[in-house]
Length: 130
Image (cartoon, rainbow, N blue to C red; front, side):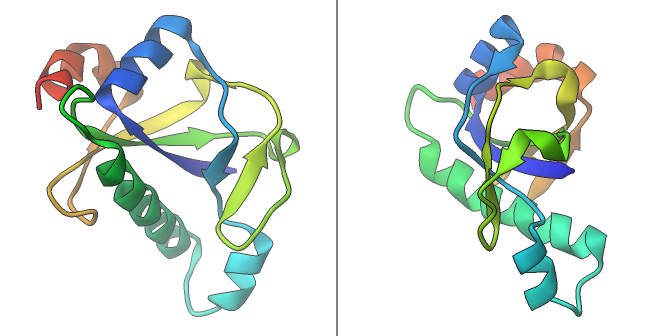
């Protein structure tokens, strides 16, 4: 299942170093969200969840954090529990190999620039200094 996590450049740097990330919750296309938005297809649902994560990421930014980011993961459903409308609890650590994409958040939450996970290391210094 594709899930989204609000993050910052400094948090991403730590994740890259550790290759593992323990978090409590991610934005996920839960059954509740899908059923209450029947007009949206899977891609539209995922986009709307990435925007929610982007809004959260902008709130995480401070003088030391670097840029706001959204990390998209492909996670086995077995690692998710306690679904509510737009999020799910994460029962085990997430691993770098699960990362599908990284979005750099612009000044607005709907201003997202896509990066492949392989681009993270080469882009990190720029993101940290943003």
